Length: 200
Image (cartoon, one colour):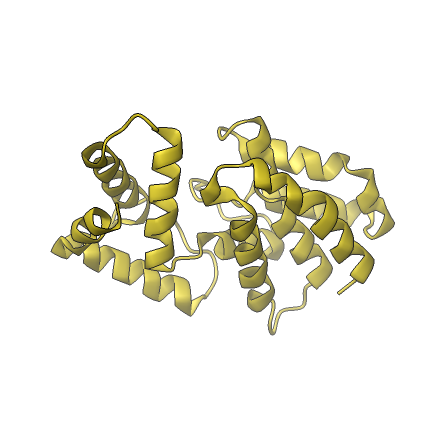
């Protein structure tokens, strides 16, 4: 890992996430980075590229949630500091990986880097998913009461992680596969509703 690059990301990119709502803050970026680097094991990939993609993957939220993967990719591509460590081809690959990471994307990412960051961003630890969904809903709907937040969280998890949900897994990852199975069990048995209620 290039220490100068690590320092740049740590001191100039990650602090920008402190301004974002809690479910997409610095803690989320650190988690995705850790997940992504773990997924690199056994793969012929540049870990510096993976680390950089993880750092930038949600930076576009500064300009709004809709199309944040497009604006984030543009921020990465336009950051001339990255020319110190990467070739134009590498930057283009990283740009595409940021564009391709979003869970609602129907097509498979264009490169192994896109698959890694998409899978790392899934981070399907059921308890963490629940916590992040609640944090997001409380921030997005500060006027909502507990019953409304409960409904929003249940609806979102069903739409995204349910048997007919839009989320796809693009590469083997035991944690995500098992986490997805657990969420679907919670949905089927009513356990999720109980857990959301007790967490509010």
